[in-house]
Image 1 (cartoon, rainbow, N blue to C red):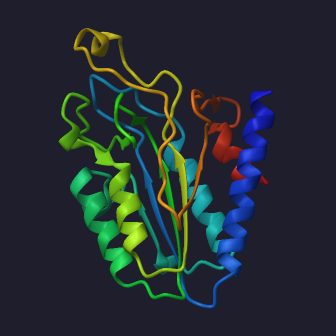
Image 2 (tube, rainbow, N blue to C red):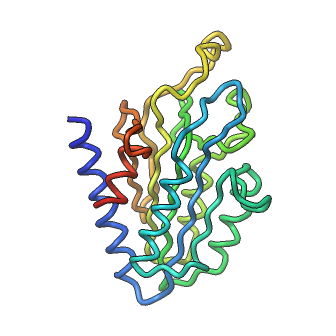
Length: 220
């Protein structure tokens, strides 16, 4: 049953990506962020995330994206493109600042994410994330707000940030940090597709060395 859900969602992503890439006469841009090695005592490292995002980048190239219009940040990149909070925010602003009304932008986020109880939206965990300090996290509202203000006509977000068993230990419970399994409230005008429905988690296929979600997106 879980694989069927992933396949349906992944096919929806692929179809949306194709429609977005073909449906505009303007330029097509993509902003890809992925974390693998967290170097954290709170969050587990994630296998395969960089490789699967690189494969997704190849899918975008095949659908007509210019290589120069795809910005990818990951923890094996050069210093300016590692997924630290300030660099993510800086590079995202730079990309959106040059967009025109006829353009299309796709944002794909892959890594750990948390949703604190009482908040309307969650947070992406960049390198250097400290779950006891929200200032070290990237609020999903940051992405939503800037996309909403962007001149681009077509805006698609693809989010895989609800990984199964994300924490190194249960120590965070002792710190009285409360997390919720809750869907984000996404502003009107942005198409957002998440790897999981509310209350679900993302899983990896060790045989294919990919997350089930991105594996179906890439192969479909």
